[in-house]
View (tube, rainbow, N blue to C red):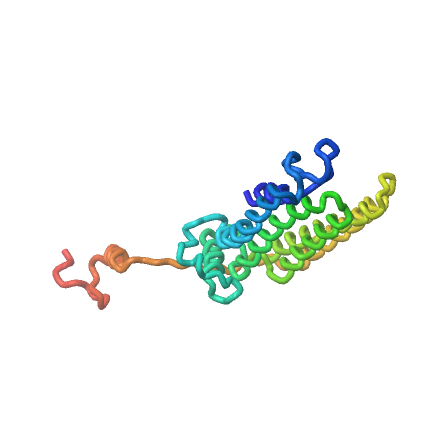
Length: 259
């Protein structure tokens, strides 16, 4: 839901030339003149509400939208860069609720992994919408965003399983390479040129080769997991009595219990 909402918000701020209405108009509402009275009111409201909305969206985004992990008291603990912050702890708890094998998020970096994903979902539609009329700038900004997301996965390993983390890291690198090839495409502006296709093919081949080498060299090991088991005292006592009904606490036969 983040991407379509951000796309609509960005569309409300994007202006384009209109021959029918004359001058600059809002792309999503051509009857509104750009940067005029009504449009300035809309921009003022969006400028006040959107940053607050996106910031308050953060603690929910890092727990996959599960409000059970975000009590109302934790909303005031907004210093998420500090260790022990409730938003960080909630992301780690949510990531370790169910063991998902090779899809299991690294609880140490769960907050950063999901936060960077959220930032990417916000930046992509904003850049694609607002820089629509300037293709070179659009592709440079998109490539920079993809580069940042790839570097983030290299610094903060997203998954517990090492091989799957490498797969995700190399796929992020491939996405960056594709967007970097897009810069070459819009810069050349030549529909008949094969240079972008050749460049993308070379980068894709290099990425696949690098991925295969890494998957072969990294040993297959089962990730270490810790399971927390909580048994109530009464249940533990009943289980012990069922296991040894004729023994006392000292391990001796209870008097009068044998037939």
